[in-house]
Picture 1 (tube, rainbow, N blue to C red):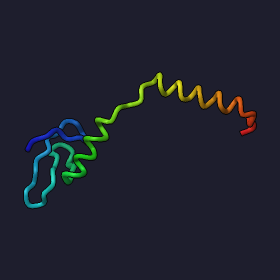
Picture 2: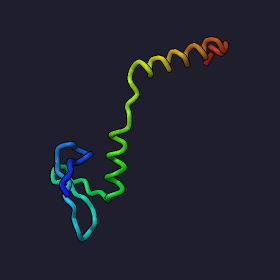
Picture 3: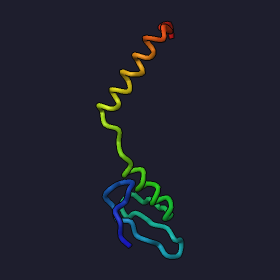
Picture 4: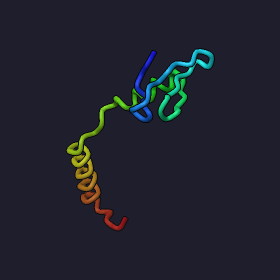
Amino acid sequence: MDQICPECSVGIMMYDIPTKRFGCKNCGAFLTRDQLSDLRHKQNAPVEDERRKRSRQQSDYLEWWLSGNKEQ
């Protein structure tokens, strides 16, 4: 089973039968099936876009400003 490495995004992950792990030929990452799955899931998780992040920051600032605790 050949797959692209989630660590370096360049190397090919090769399955090593005796150790039951995937190894990258490029960066040397040596991962179990669960670790590989977790890394792929983290990469595919939706990234918060800048507008949503900025809106949340503005909302937090407004809440702080209206609270009256400005000496922090």
